[in-house]
Length: 169
Image (cartoon, rainbow, N blue to C red; front, side, top):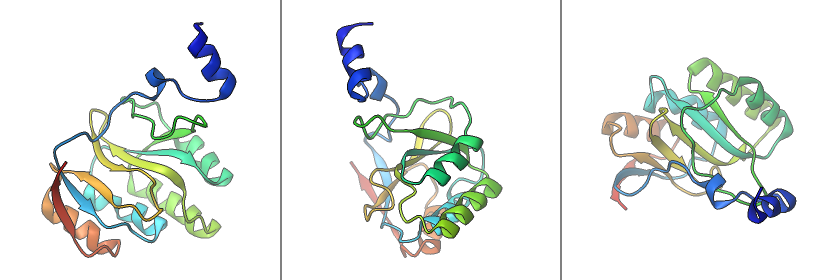
């Protein structure tokens, strides 16, 4: 073990190599105003991604929700870039199925969890499809430009955001 790896373990931060991974990157994307309801947002995700994707939760804020995520987490085919390097965050990849999302949403609503995770992404195992840093905290979320406009707009309306705008960043 080299000195930097030793120090990262000792101080509890992620090294640059550990933090590296997939991001939405530059290019066309949809920007959606921040939703106000975490449970409703999770329930609406199948509108955007009707098949085979994963929800990525990083930096959970509630022990009961972290336990639920741990019980339903799968090994990910994609390494997602960490949004937090200190303290080293917990993270979970959960299959994006309507039943699991409904269970997660019910737990969030029942426990009154306003911010279930600090960062939230969706990926299909090969690329990031939704990227949301400081999730559930008033920041807009970004959806890959390849997602069809009608699905993005329906999702935005369902979560109370009214519309989505196209952006090149």
